[in-house]
Image 1 (cartoon, helix red, strand yellow):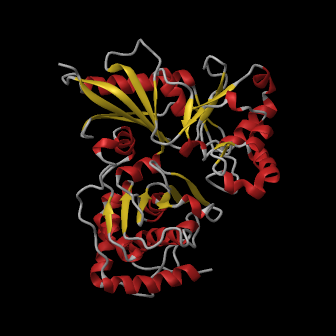
Image 2: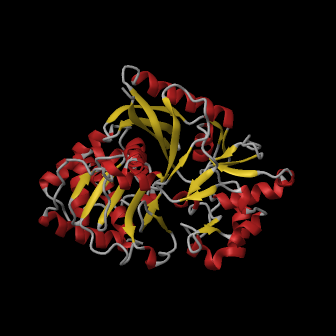
Image 3: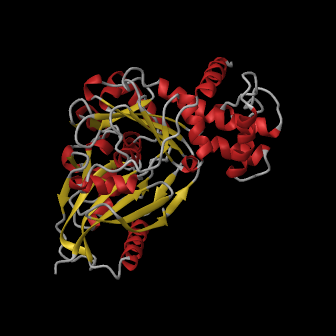
Length: 463
């Protein structure tokens, strides 16, 4: 009997490398994670060592294999999703010549200014985000060119983190257009590498990854693979992690994916013909055609954690929920204190003093107001929204889900799928484009919607 086909999904996150094993029907059979092995991490410089990355990757695969040791499956597909463009420069054989520079790395401030001066007029027509920021791949490539010109004389190539891991499996050096569009070297307008950006960085397409569509698979050439990996393995390029999570939850037109993580993220589907959105909003291609928009803000659960640690003695998030629930039970008051997540670290985060319950409630409410404000950036591109899916740590709180439903006046549910499921779903479209789970949505409460509308208007006006 032939071994059952398995799909290995990988998520290259900022904190963990995560993996899950799925059968052909997208049932999750095993999962594991390992810490991302940073070689250097401070406020500016964030690097990873290639050897340490490969060791972590092998440990991850070994853990997955141990969990499925009793199964009869063989991995025939590996689907990889990733955070934004972490990359290294390699020699022509694929051996790293530099550390991997994380997308969190901010060293390239001078280069960011140069790129802004040279390319800013048309930048958002080509790149997923604008204006340019030091974290962009193009900025750090230019930083390396200015300081390490010998790498260019040696014929260096660029490889992304997911490309490096899939290369160990025998895949060619490729990246998908969803991820490429987030780096600044690729043109959404042209659907190919951006000539002006390449000229600025001294690159040519032959030294860059090959381009594939998000969700597209490529065959692996390696013949000697670990036993759990089948000969003829293929690697599916599953785009950025937010896209994979949206795909897992069936994020169709009118659906919004909100991530209540350390940062806030609002992700939605949009039409490519709409052109670039407003500056500060991401855009790019979506699996199977169409496009996405994404707005983000740093202060999501980061604001909650700051409030817990600095004003509530480090109490658990669940205790904050219980305190906020008391306020909701006794009835929302239009003039109660407001909380502004963008002002954490200052005495002005709350508009006024109140009892602990009122202060705790204001924190959750203020983060929900930030979500609504992010949604306002979408303009008419979102159309008439019909459903909100919520991922991230905050999605575990039913109270927070209900507060979001009342703030946005939309049915709101916890996301049923994660980025690993989304990556696997792209690898097995015959199994369906992911699932939004069976959780019943929280429906808006008309009375609270009206009070929150008044409070939100006041919150927006606060100087």
